[in-house]
Image 1 (cartoon, rainbow, N blue to C red):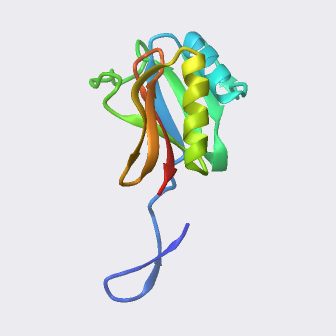
Image 2 (image 1 turned 90 degrees about the horizontal axis):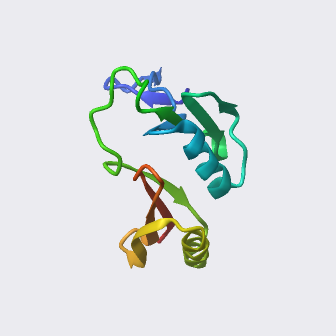
Image 3 (image 1 turned 180 degrees about the horizontal axis):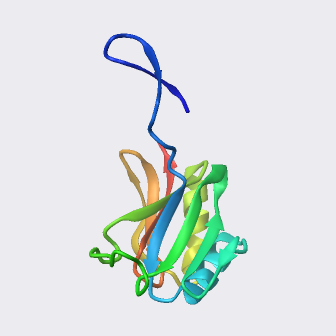
Length: 136
C-alpha cells in the first residue's frame, strides 16, 4: 500500500484499500452478462445464476449481482450512479456512441463537450448509466 504522511510528519503505511470492484444490481445476471459480453467484447470470468463478473482494465472488476439476492437488499434504484469508461480522444467518444447506438443502447446524453471533456451517457437494460469520456 502507498505511504502516507501523518500529522506528525512521519511516513506511515496507508490503510486505505484499493478500489477493485463496481457492482451493479441487476434483474437477471444472465441477461446482463450477455449484454456486457457484447458491449465489452469479452467473456465473464465468473458466472452463476445470481452473479457474473467481468475483468476490466488495470485490475478493476465489474460485477452483476441479482437484485433479488443481494443482502442487505438495495435501497437505491438504477441510474443513481454511473460507470465511467475513459477513452483516449474525443473521436473515440463519437465512435463509441455510433457503435452503441447501432447496438440499440438507449442514449440519454448525446456526445457533447463539457468542462471535463467530451462525453455521452447510455443506459444498460437495467437503467444503469454508462458514461464514455475523453478527458479534456
